[in-house]
Amino acid sequence: MEGLEHVSPLLGFLIRLTSVDTAVTIYWVILIALSILVYNLGFAKKLKLWQNVIIYLSLAIGSLLLLILSYQLPVVESLVVAALVLGTYKFRLKKHQKEENSV
Image 1 (cartoon, rainbow, N blue to C red):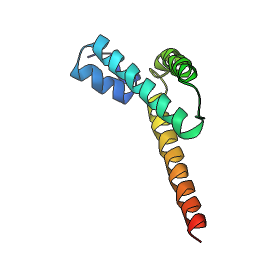
Image 2 (cartoon, rainbow, N blue to C red):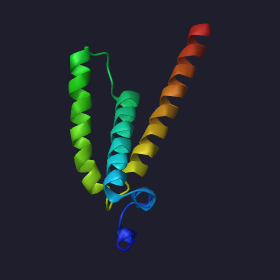
Image 3 (tube, helix red, strand yellow):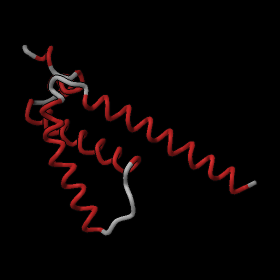
């Protein structure tokens, strides 16, 4: 596969495993999943169901822009790092709150 030296390593790997169309679709689903995860870990509030549907649809549509940018930029890798940082923060916050309540 010529020309894959300029795409994201994960996308290049997916293209080598499957066809280009399938790889881009899988990559887009990964972007949506990571965007939803980061949103839930860092920014989500208790909302009504229809409001959550609108937010998730907006994240899916916004992921199309991230998909275009991810051909040259490490978008997926950045979302993974953001999810790890926010997950660690949430874990430590809950642990701290649990310790405060038990004292």
